[in-house]
Image (cartoon, rainbow, N blue to C red; front, side):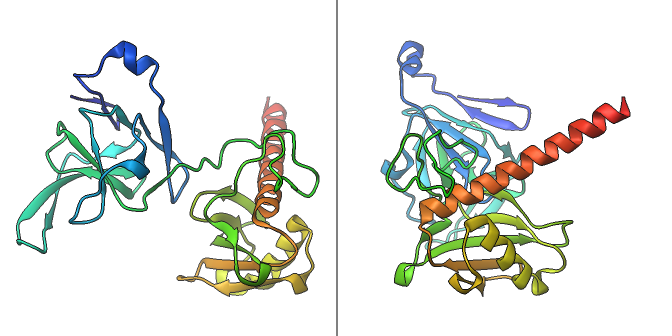
Length: 263
């Protein structure tokens, strides 16, 4: 059975026992691009079967509770199968404007398909605990330590690799957001001329010298890959999070002060 609440399409199971669901373990998944909460389900995506046509993860909503916090398109998109040439109508689920899944049987269908690589179990909004020190040395698994997202990984030759998406022509350099796929960073001026200023800012945030860092061009004009020595992925993630949270707190304080002044 399916129920529509506003722009969110919510799946439930008519065959599921409510008392059993109350004690079931729920997994939460997030958009890999923006980090928004997209799916809550009793299924574990990594353990589910995949569709042969496009490698999408298949959730049987008769077996698993699956609640999508997305916009489900009411107008289907026709997709032609390469193997037999048949056209399949898909009702796509969107996180913002990004497709993350679809239904091929209509909005009340039994099967929900999650696009390959669209979701992550990583939640960038969750706080670290109190166990991080000033440099973010949570690599030893201290209290509250959380693993870094997939966009911050160990690279070759002892480097830490950070995938960055540049948001150009901002008023100042800042860590805007951290998602599973990249760290969104505000830079002053256009993207093509931001590398020097961005490296200086990252040096302050990560506590590194310029000689310990380099920036590579990504797959598009606004993407960068940072290669840093002298820090590990957990330390880099903790430092970037602190910079993001400090900026958010400062912006909130300014906004609150402006509000008080207006009153």
